[in-house]
Image 1 (cartoon, rainbow, N blue to C red):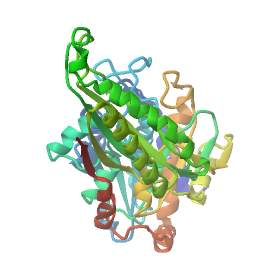
Image 2 (spheres, rainbow, N blue to C red):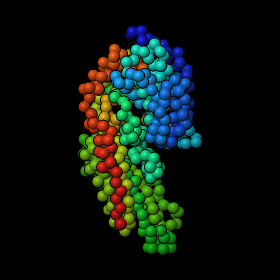
Image 3 (cartoon, helix red, strand yellow):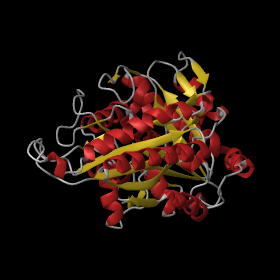
Image 4 (cartoon, rainbow, N blue to C red):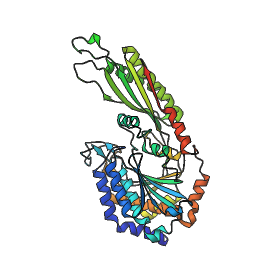
Length: 438
């Protein structure tokens, strides 16, 4: 361990209580995607207190804070932290004003980035970083509330439902060369690197019928709920056509099932994500989803409107970064460190960023219970928050020391799928459509 690494660890340990207090505050005041105004303000306040220039209001709530701007031409490294929570009102730490709870651990990301900023802004540490560091708080990673996001689209406030996707589209990543990101993981191990993950498109399906008295004159109505039910059944029968190796996941919910029990439902709204391991696979599954609801509407004489929006691209496999493995060993020498592998059916907009630049991932533990579940619980604040902060900061130092040679090597050797954000947006827009079947 060199002197700068020692200083980083000491600086974070000195601010341990402040980092944990920040984490607890975010944990108890969760907000949903594109609504994280209070969470963003708390982050902005901390960044300004550290003397960092900030850019705010990016994709509504996104915020960037800059360290070592004079070194940005060498290389620009971003820490990615996610602002949003999940709608799980039964959780012990749910925000009663928003029904949102951080059962995916995004509050730990934010605490880790804040803790890293506390260390890296120490002058004798900052001078050892031969590149720019961007502390980047991003909105709306948890893809949900599709109807609300469609309202934002109609108002011209966003185009994409995912926060990083929207940030890519508006060019907020154009001044960044590579990224470090984090996620929490149940258990006590530290995981470095990432396997593959599903991509998806999102759909809002409106089955439109005709209202009538449900008991007195049902023959005069067209039951939209029956049309939706047939569509869901047809979708279920299509599942045997999904190849196992494609890891297809289609998981609809009904967000509107009618207006009154004694009125034939004239509008039923179904939201779903259509996920798979490859773009080709989720495109195929999306076509089968559309056909299923077309069939249900035709059978009942109803009308169906299907709005498809671009979701997330598949997550790309990423080897464990040696600098992050070293950061884990220095931050938590008694903790088991393993390399990520395999495939997950879940999705993240980190995959979209990977299609343009290198992104290096690590996971810390300190929690139990499943992600996205009411049983999610923080059990070890030291690992969840403090070790996370240390790994962010030490990882940055490893990548930016000695004229940032390591970062420049990684960027030079990376082969992005899209050469720039405009090409990315052009590709994503093919999944933006609305179809109406009378």
